[in-house]
Amino acid sequence: MIQMNIAWKARLGQAMVAATTAWGLLTSAQAQSVQGVTNTEIVLGTHQDLSGPVSSIGSHLRDGLQLAVDDINAAGGVHGRKVRLIVEDSAFDPKKAVLATQKLVNQDKIFALIAPLGSAPVQASMNIALEQDVPLLFAGTPADFTYKPFHKLKFGLAVPYGEQVRAMTKYAVEKMGKKKFGILYQDDETGQNVLRAVEEQLKVHGMAVAERASYKRGEVDFSSQISRLKAANVDVVMLGTIVRETAAAKMEARKQGWPVDMMVSQAGMYETVIKIAGEAAEGLYAMAQYLPIRTQEQTPPLQAAVKRYQDKFNKEPDDGMVYGYLAMSVFAEGARNAGKTLNQETLVKGLEQIRNFKTVFAATPVSFGPNERLGSRSAILTQVKGAKFVPITGPLDY
Image (spheres, rainbow, N blue to C red):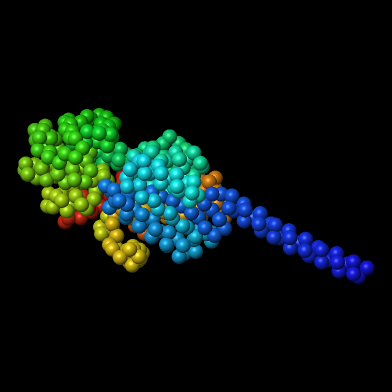
């Protein structure tokens, strides 16, 4: 009888060990059943322009993403899981973006696609991710398709240029007392978007655009356009321009001795504009979702982040890295809110809980909700003073 009890206890012990092992394997399998998520790691992917026409933006956006990954992991990760980022080069080519996304989703098995850069590359590739239940998070473009039409796995973060322009137009009417609006805009969807936004907001105020002047993409001689706007005697010029064109417009107005106020969206709020235009850039108004690093309040946390960046990349940080850092930080906040069980459903719920989120970098706060897939609809109005973009308002919306 004693021998039978011993044998029975031995078998019972073996069964318990086997059951514990099986439970451990089952738990591990469950954790790994979600693509890109294990007990120890979250794998994210992105495609950036690292060798094409806007590589200066793409490389810094990538750096911002990676700096945030380092900070998140140094703080223990997300519920014990470390974040790993895989980066592919799209060269700002939609076809290469498609191939990059296919690799990230099908071979690298990423959990989410985060902050991919560029309207055309993202639009061409985003459905590859969404159709396989891979969240598309915070694409690096202000295009409406980053959050519309509503999709449970699609979240936008970049304030659309149209919304920036409407807020800026409202400010010009209500706070600056502007009454006669002119617009200089690129003759394509980018410029037309700005034109529509100005017209829509002016209609709210019972006003209309007094004069329009368009230009072809790549054109930087605006002598005739500025002359036309000047002859119309407008008291503010809204710019549907990007970097070089913004500088060229300010330089031409100065050349013609016309000190008119000019206002541009974040598309023209780059320090390169100041470098090109020099003194002519003074007075330019520009909207900003985030401020240039050197114009931000140099708080100890900001200085520490800049120091970490300099040590890691052996260069000075560029403004584009702020968006990357913000995007990765927002993801981490949503994943923390999701709890220890991370999957598409819990991530969505975790992101929807975010309210007024900020990082060490000065930017408009981020909030989501069950019916809100755009993280911010406001921007800060800045003005060039002393060769710097200086904030003159808090976050504005229309």
